[in-house]
Length: 231
Image: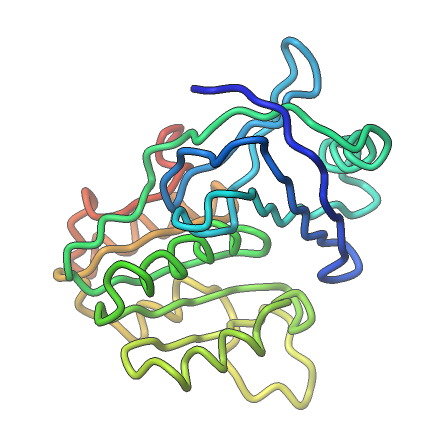
């Protein structure tokens, strides 16, 4: 994989604890939707982050980094980017990439795992815009789903796209789905035999989802996520 330096163009808050980072490489980056980059903190210290922008928009790298006060791993990356103004990265890495063959697609994200699904969704709209696609985004609270308004607008624009926000701890006035995000998928799609599923979030969620989706007829070779390289 190629290693290269990027200018840190901007770091802007998406929520109180999630930051959008935009990196500008000297040359366009060769990657596929669904891949990730490694941030090189040191010779033997490389940290993975999903690429949030689509592959056709390869003159930049967008990251969504969750960095609450207890997350030293991510905060150290942001501090280095702010202090140095440049960062060395490598990529694209990973094999959980978009396979746009017309099969209906379900995207599932937990928290900032959304960045993985956001890259895939934007790429899909570009290369196969008629593909039926549903995005389920789970968060602890409604405010954690930081691009909900944009996704709702896209669902109104594309008849073949549906967006389902799922909140684990809803406010009293919440009108949407609640509970575990993969369970919402199973409620809407009891038969998953003709679907592709792309998932990003906690490893334990990915493992449980794989087991549960198999009971709904999913061909697990059509289940994509970086977690499955380790599970």
